[in-house]
Image (cartoon, rainbow, N blue to C red; front, side):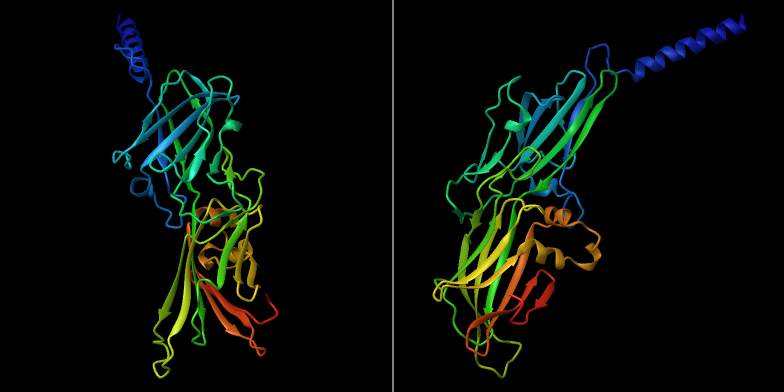
Length: 331
């Protein structure tokens, strides 16, 4: 009798365990299926999603890459605890997210006209809204994230986390003359040239013509020469602000400074090479691509002087915390 009672008790407990572990309750609510977004792929290694991202768009494809649906959300409730609920049947899915596109559509064109069952993940592309060879507008911040395989289960909760990458890179360039000569913004041009005006669903640049990013802001500045108080001459500089879309280690990027008056290039470098050289020692083991994706802003100081023939030459470059001094044969 006791043995029978123990068997019945064990069977009852086992049944209750299955009931509580199942996602189907008496009111027939399915298992929760949610997506969380984080932006910790930055140089601070901390989640900045709540403070920087105000909107997000999610595109859902089946495991063969066919379009199923899209969702979007925006507002102050996109905080650290935000989760986007999904209504998906059990199966495997591909998820692609773009953030920062709902508040300002003047800079970008995202191909959102996808047809269920016929459009594929390859049809999803982000493009700059320009047909020109040069671009001088201030870009709004935009982020990308993806999950190649998200499994939705029938008998268990399904949670996904999408890590976002900021795709806009900002450069603040100061061109300084060391000899007190005034600099006119009409005499100098700045440019970052690369082929990245279109990004695919994997955040990779599509094959396209190169684009020259020009300053959206260029001003003349005068700097008090506090380093040499006995010298009355102030220092003159130009301050340029440029931005680009995502930079990758396999697509060439050139940074140029040109004296338009003399029709002479003062500076023409492989930008990726210099950014890689000037990583802080603490990030020495970081790949170039990871550094390009994590870092979103660069402070560049160019010191210009003259050679023995009186020609303008670049003497040094500083990017963020590192400085490189040139001799006249290096450029």
